[in-house]
Image (cartoon, rainbow, N blue to C red):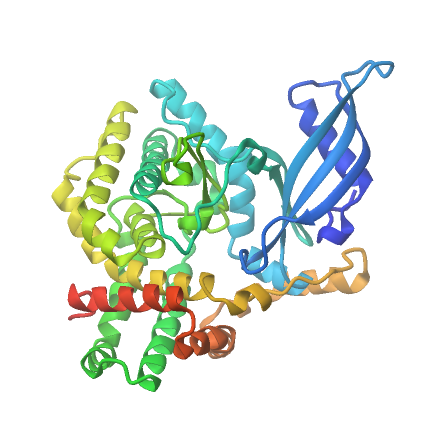
Amino acid sequence: MATPACKEEISKEWLQVILTQYESRSKPKASVSVTHFEVNPGVDPGENFSSQLVKIIVETKVSNGDYAEHTTKTFNLLAKFMHGNGFLREIGKATNAPIREVMIYNEVIPALNQFQSEKGDGSDQVDIPGFVHGVCVEGEYVLVMEDIRLSGYVNNNKSKGLSHKQILMAVEKLATVHAVSYAYNKFHDFTHKFPPFRYQEKAPGQFTFFIMTFYDLCVNHLEKVKYNEKLLKKLHTNRAVVKQRILSLLLPQNQQMKCLCHGDYWNNNFMFRSDKPDGLSDPDAIMLVDWGNTQWYTPVLDLQYLIHTSTKLDFRRKYREEILQHYHSTFTAITTKLGAPVPSWTFDVFKEECQKARIFGVVMGMTVNLITLSKQNETMPLMLTKPVNSSGLGWKISCRLGRILAPLFHSKMMRPLGRSFFKKWLGPNFSELSSGKNEIMNERFYDLLTEANEDGVFDI
């Protein structure tokens, strides 16, 4: 049965097939009959930028092999589809990001959790939504998981920034993912076990190109609003140095430590649960979501990304040292417990690596805050979702063309087109920034810029 390409193609028959497979994992003779289902938006407008997320409520009758007896059961699911037409989907798949996300839920995290239970005491579980179904082949992509909101998990308000308890919990869970995967690699060779996570030679150059395109857009914006002439001169003069620093951070030969990194670890990609009167500011549990940008590289990039995308200036000034210490102590304790202690990775060495990686964190923090805090994205999402007809000949041809042309699309010769796309894509966000009407977005953006300048991040 063909995989639906968007919410409009979700059918009763498809749901019966995938839910029967899901139930059969624990009950081999199970059979699921769908009596009713509803498809609703999975997130508010402007909250999801690279995929279509929908909520599916499915009412069923489940048989365990005896068709004379059955039980009623309601499944609360989230389904994730890719945006765009068939051509663009196949271009995106060429990065291996979609298949990596399916593998995270279906294979990688279960393997890591089993490993740490066998080598440790089972206390270092990585909690993610339950995997229901996933496929990533030519022309088809969908990821179906349990809707953890029914268990009380919610996102922290992104405009507030993380609380002290929240960031310590988020840092501890991030360090757990990093540490367990690092230890696993010492015993099982992670990228041999999971080939789509192997290093792609063009990835550092492509990512650096994206970052520097944003850097140039920032400089153009600062010139228009006549912001701090000394800083502007520094940004112009030191551009080549900034580019080389970022590229150096992304090159695998310069990364002493490598592990499984989330790649987009910010406020909206983990969810908290709390039964306490104070609510989410003092959570009891955390669940990691949205693994679409997972990579195998140095962990300090994940940490710097978190700090600069999800906290406010005063918070960073007060707690940066504690955050680094909590991460390092968690990472080293877990790797030692799992039989893979990290030689010579003292806190001072780790802290120096974090300082070198701040340029990455600052620029990505400015990027994420500009996009996610924008008011215009609530009514004009960056990525538009439109119904598709995946059974038509045109769809199949566009998918095949996408796969054939993917290497060309990701080549250097296409960068002028990419630069034009980014400029058009982010233009409305910079216009909103210039207007000064979005106080929260402006505060986050300029605080990151000012802090980095004061701390010498842009200096040679």
